Each structure stands twice: as structure tokens, then as C-alpha cells.
Length: 232
Image (cartoon, rainbow, N blue to C red):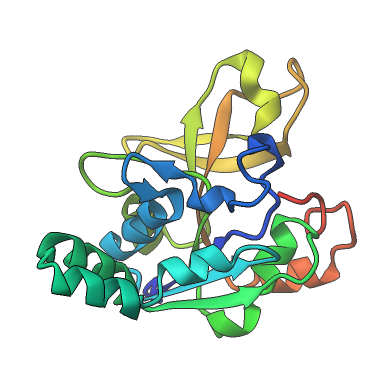
């Protein structure tokens, strides 16, 4: 079983659900308390044992790259004023090894993941959606998925139960329960079904472990079949 060492964070979408806040600020950079959203996601990946992170960025997303870069002028000012705690926080994000690929056109989540093909080098990998924070006091959500992958193999989806009247906002799965494992073997999956047509109320979270075979599938799909379905 190949170890999950790489993760892709799609972060190229327009963020239309958060307008007007996202007109000039990437949705991934919107703050939650004292950190931008994407920092929580990157930290979850690192805490889960991920060694290499690829962020799929897009137009007007330079702020993400700047956040994980060094800031010599700011660091010099903090050092001069002996603000050591703040200096440590600034340098901490700069020390994270993050790679970037730009999605040149907004052709959906599948296309964003397809941009990572050469980076993954045929290995299974993790996906963390760039605007989806999953908090857990114990083991990180992604680490839970990695452990399941190491035990069972295959692709793994993080899921949660949602109210039945909310299923149209999610991808929804149904399957056969694996006794004693808190797992489902997926037998059906529908993207944003109408209320009353969903196979269950088990919704997919923005966390995945995916086989590299997904790239061959995405390559063959045409627009509207999952690769170029929306400006996520």
C-alpha cells in the first residue's frame, strides 16, 4: 500500500457564494478568528502526515501565495521591535513547503484536480477543498481517511449526515455498512440531488483520498460530466 504523501488543495474558484467579500479577496483568505481559512486546511494536511502540498490557484489569488511566502520587510520590523511571538507566527507559514499550479480557466473542480496530474506522479493522493474547514479535537479528519485507506485500500470519502432538506447542496452517497468500522462501501453517488431523489442524507465532505486512476477518467470526460461542471 502506497503511503499518502501528497495533497492537492483546489483554490481557484470565484467564491460567488461569498460576494461581495470575495470580489477582491480570495475566499480561501477570509479569516476565521486570527488565521485565513486556507491556513487551517494546510495545517490539517501537515498534521495528517502530508509531506508535499499543491495549491491549484487562479486569477486574483496571489494573496494565497504571498501568505505562504517570506515577508522580509515585515519580519525585519517585528524583529527590530522585539515582537518575537508575532515574528515566529509570520515565519511559521513561510517555512511550509507549498507548490502552486494556476488553473487558467474556471472549468470546475474536476479540471482543477486534473491540473495536479504530473505533480502526483501516479501516487494516490489527498484532496482538501480550499474553503472547507473540518475541525476535530482529536485525530484530524484527513488523517482518519488516510488510516482507512491504509487498512482497506481504494478511494475514501469523508462524509457527514445532513438534514434531508439540505441534500441538494451536496454530493450524496449510499452504500453497504461495514460492520463495526463506521464505514460505508459506496454503491450510489449523486451530485446535488433534488430533495426526495437523494439516495440517502449522507453527504460528502471536502476531504478525499483518491487513486491516480482518476486522471484517466477526467481526461476522457467532457464538459458537464464532472471535469468542467462549474466555477467552484
